[in-house]
Length: 437
Image (tube, rainbow, N blue to C red; front, side):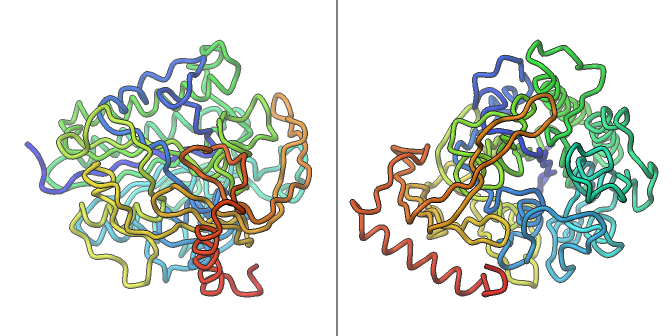
């Protein structure tokens, strides 16, 4: 029997490349459960995050706010307060509408009592408070030597110093908590399940269930385990009679960390994580909700991560936060009933640097002049390579015909440049103060 309001499940990966799963990429390892989800829903080929770095991306998902509004940039270090509680999270929005909420995986938007999941709208939670490389075993960042990598459960530390062997279990643990949550809360009232996996952020690990199984190296093994996790969640939903009543979203916080070579994912687009090129900001996305979202479709319709909170609030019949947000309800885009995006543009930034905008229809992208990290040499087997300094002049790209951002059309389309530049300058004036830029 269909519920009036759907359960909502979001599986959010860390540093996964756009082409890491079929049907987006032609992988040399199987990903049957992502394909299964795609057959039940829509593949969104041009879904964007507004900043291609861990904490900023997560904060935008959770709050519906751009980094310039909520002031979460880049990747937060351990123990920082992080996201101001004055910005409501999607957990709080859905919880206030009667949803039971769970978060199992990497949080990374605050590591103080008032900014961890139990205080930010999640009835149950487990996982790391920050990235799994922020620990004493990091190969070249000694600033984390004094921090234990702690594993939390419902507001309590259950492992004070996660070991390399225990990292192998992170995907499995998040999956098991997610399955238990579904079994415990299936029934008349809807639930929201957020599974932000720590993988495939380096250092990458998988359990012995998948070690060596892909035939494509450790990264392929990790991808297969994440695919397995999605399958377990879907199977548990089906066993509990909830699969038909559940909206499932599967995506990543940003593109691959290219410096790690064979321990990084694949994107066909320019550059990767920590840049505002599409290799960093474009994430493969699949969404399914039987009877509401079409099945087996693929689209280049554009929307962004800030739109998730208001769209889910609509489905949950929940009130929007009292604080201002930037996202808009894009349910008509997700259901393919419309291609008209309510946004005139989306902004992009890297850290505290505002770098450009893309038109709301995804057709034109304008980069303001800015420097960026350009891969010079990839590392191997968990050791990072090196970047060199790159620089891009004012540049306009036709994203329909040149999604790889190769040909600057700034001289050919001055009217488009002037329009997008005016939008970018106004956005920068409103949200990026001199101390932030």
